[in-house]
Image 1 (cartoon, rainbow, N blue to C red):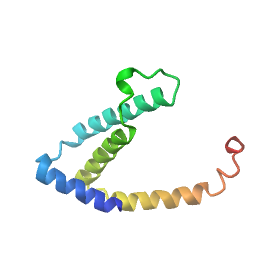
Image 2: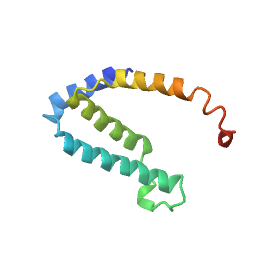
Image 3: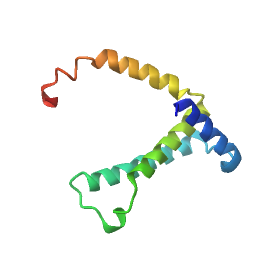
Length: 108
């Protein structure tokens, strides 16, 4: 699914189920909270911190989806076309990094 369709799906959900968007500052705080939940899972499951019993059932995919949902909300309410922005970013990264990573001794 294209990002544009995801933005439309979230907008439709907000209008029919969510009543309205939270303001941008609230959504930014929510995004920070969701990223923190992803960080907690990664740090404990894949990092050096021990995983609490209560964290073992946390679904990383669900938490990443929460990050995506709030990101899409912020894009919608600020008039940002994420598909266009993503396409531009990929083009830039491809041009800039085409040989950079291939020549990085740390990645070999």
